[in-house]
Length: 324
Image (cartoon, rainbow, N blue to C red; front, side):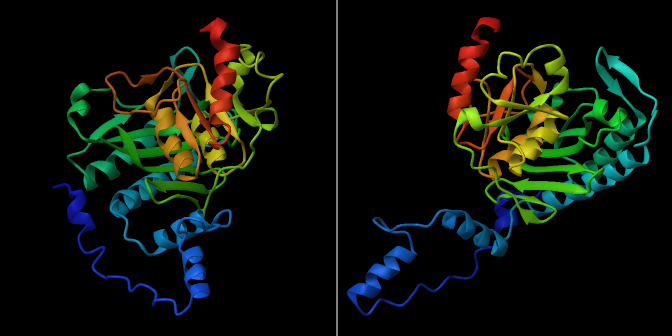
């Protein structure tokens, strides 16, 4: 039986915080107002984020069990992937330019067993499982890519991830990505921030589009899809979509976008990592991403540190409009 949100949250707020004692003077009153961020106070940069993280450290997550299962599943799948991470691994083409290996398939089975045992009533959507519209009847659906970046994996480039996300009513609420080659585990719960190996992560602070480092697909670059953008931003060729999103969440890049349709399992977990690290992830019109749709194929997306988002959307509209 699934745990309901209110059941999980019960008792989390059983203690009532005692407020500060009343200030004795006008000066003390002004100091108290400043400390609590009332109108007119000056809040130091980053103070809200630090306060949020302090609150998160003491809060009881309503998705604690889901996060734990996602982490365990991603690590177990990552161990499988790492066993196959050797030069010359055999692969076959599911479709042109879309390879699959035994690592993909075994990791998929591993994650599915974890999820099915813990949450048997939830829906399931994975790159390596035949899709069924039965998932559309579920409020909660696990969206999984057991190995995002199979091409990088085959080429022994350590820029791939195991991706596990839980979607509730169309929005990701739990996300885990694991890069076993670097032993880096990225995790996020909606409203609770993003961590990397347990350390809080945050997006970059780059504010000008000409200064932006935009992470781009090697395949798209080979097809010339980035040529028109190179005069406007710093383009850095980087691995899989999920890996790029994790890099944005940690400030290792400022943004990434693609005009090429991507599947939900490519971007679901990473989009929450970016958002919970302080950035934005939207479609190419700036609208929120919605998951567990009848077709898992999404027509492009953009993720950024948030500050650059509107400027990059304008650039895409200007540069890419003739091609779209």
